[in-house]
Image (cartoon, rainbow, N blue to C red):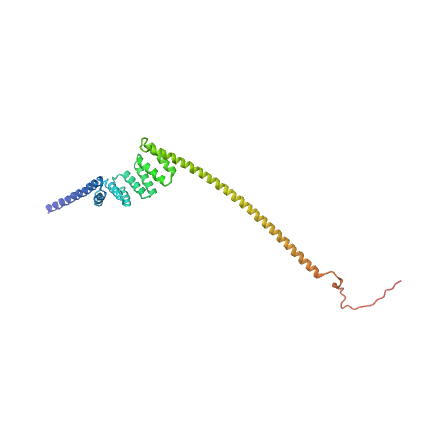
Length: 262
């Protein structure tokens, strides 16, 4: 019984060792295919190695790049992001490559964020700063882009692209000056427009008040005219002739008297 158990244990160990060798071989074949510019073949072997659970830290880098080379950008981005969750992988390179892939897909804000993470993973990673500057420039974030380009020049004082970067910085500073002047002009124009609108509004309000005053005066005059007309009509109806007066003698018995004159 013990002999049987030992044989089974040895068989299991053999299977594990064989599997590890097989998975390791898949990685080796994938790496070789990638390095010899056979990305489609590399994808097959590297994916098999990763899916099997055999994790070589470079598997995610090579597979992501192979996806990128074959135009499978979303798969490329996804495998890079999968790799950063694996202990022992090169977070600096994986985030950087994820940024490049996002940039290629036109996801500029996502690319900017990935470059920032790559820079956090390695504060000396000047390429991440340069690529982040480019991503920010594409988003028209001029001030942030300028800061990154200047930081890159400090980090790489002998960089091969420094001359071009300096020329670009001159253009960006000129563009900022132009935009600042245009913003000032627009602000002044808006101020003039606001003052003119206020002036017109005051004039309209004054005109409204004057119109109301005139209308009130006309209404008062019309009311006075109607009042006088009514008074005239009433007076004409009442009249002032004696025939219109009553002596109050109707129905009173008459009597005679004599005037005696001395």
